Image 1 (cartoon, rainbow, N blue to C red):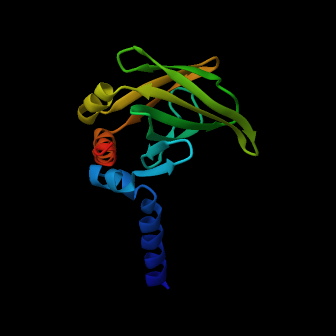
Image 2: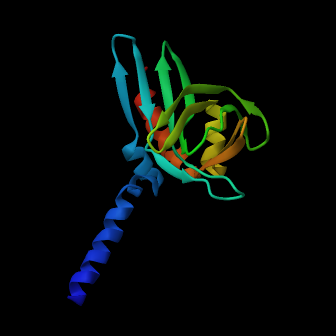
Length: 173
């Protein structure tokens, strides 16, 4: 009986870590970054693996599913840090700032009520140079709304793995 419980606990721990397995190394992020094409509109999206961020410090709440993505269209590539924020009440996000306080282009994507509260989907546009520097120090963006703010941090290896795959996928364009 005791051995059965031990095996069950080990399996739960192993399976619990599977969802983040693609985020632990630059190679894992590279492997889990993919592209989807829309030949009718002549665009492609490159999307990194989703990371989950929890906000429980300094009286904030909620969590977010975040990832890097790039729109490839007509020779112009637009990098974004995409955030799907979940909470019990609206924050009404409307702007984004880098770690130096510089304003980033903010894009509201959608807001909706869901069974367990609300979701706000939005993104901050990031330059190639900004992403390249984030491969060394990480990526930190502060999103601000009418009812508060949240900081999203992505580790340097995530950005490094994502950029490696992005460059590989767009090398022949």
